Length: 64
Image 1 (cartoon, one colour):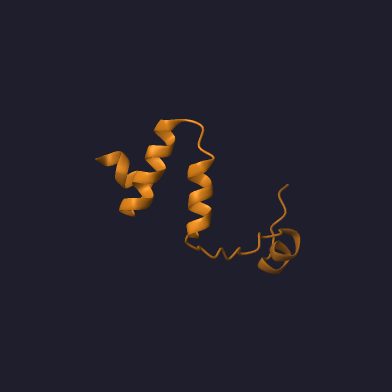
Image 2 (cartoon, helix red, strand yellow; image 1 turned 90 degrees about the vertical axis):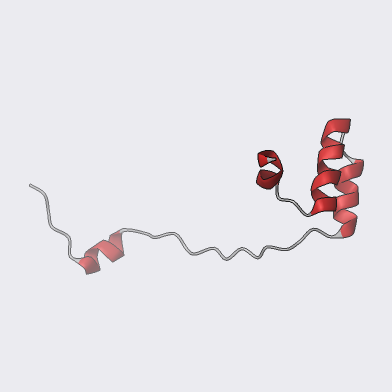
């Protein structure tokens, strides 16, 4: 037989995940330069330069 849970018992037995607040920050100029300098392939380097110079998002560029 299945036991019916009250809302109080349910809250005591089930652990809910905590809300995670993520702060979104723009990349610093030095971070962008280090990413570009560490690109091994020229295609990826050009892609990163395109995105940073035009302020496009990745999905916006893929739609073009």
